[in-house]
Amino acid sequence: MPPSAAPCKTRRLLDFLFLREYNKTMIIDYQTAALIIVDVQNDFCPAYTSGGKSHPEGSLAVAGGGEVCVPLNAVAERFAGRNGKVIATQDWHPKNHASFASAHPGKKVGDFIDLGSVQSQILWADHCIQGSQGARFHDDLNLDSVNLIIRKGSNPLLDSYSAFFENDRQTTTGLDGYLKAFSISTVFLGGLATDYCVFYTAMDAMRLRYKTYVFTDAVRGVDYPKGSIEQALGAMEGAGVGMIKTSDIPQN
Ligand SMILES: [Zn+2]
Image 1 (tube, rainbow, N blue to C red):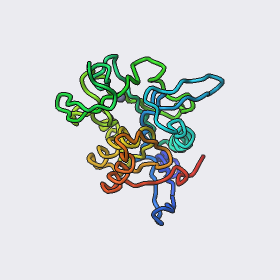
Image 2 (spheres, rainbow, N blue to C red):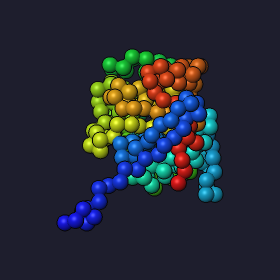
Image 3 (tube, rainbow, N blue to C red):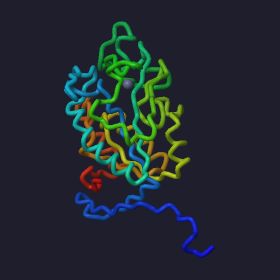
Image 4 (cartoon, rainbow, N blue to C red):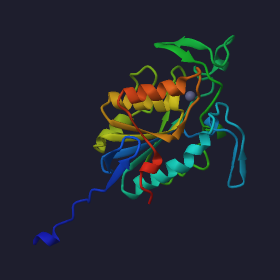
């Protein structure tokens, strides 16, 4: 067979970026990169209207939570258009989950308890109950580009902030295996909340030796305890997580 008739190898799809914040260039190879959209769910978002439908404030609303949808949709489209993987995570708790203050008589939202092997578990308002409206993705998040949805926090006795491991730091969600099966070595993160699920996902990604980037314009935080957003961003950057903006990624 002449060389011209040989089957074509999949063309690598690359983007060359210039990161203004760091004054340096960067290459994204979409064959080895994944976008992880963390917990963009109604219960983490303030009240909004989409397609004529009104949604009440989520039980654990993060200021500006819904604002991450538009920039993340644009990045997800770029990934999907270049055959990159897009993963979305969903907090997905049974009723009476142990992270809910309502499950602990005498305790209130914001209190800390020891939960099995997990010390200093914050108690939250009831949120993201399996099948509820609050657990659904924000209506403005376009799921068409998403390859995989990871649901976490289903163990009634254990919370799960990270997209990789539950809070015992041992129980896997399966995400690491999925990424490794596709030889993915770089992950880009956005979503909610900066100081909890995004933070723990980023730190686990570093621990698992992924090159890790956070879109600083496409995350929003709880900021409880006060200052925790700033602390989380500093800790991520200190651990080697790259801070970039969604506008650094070319649009389709
Ligand atoms: Zn939760």
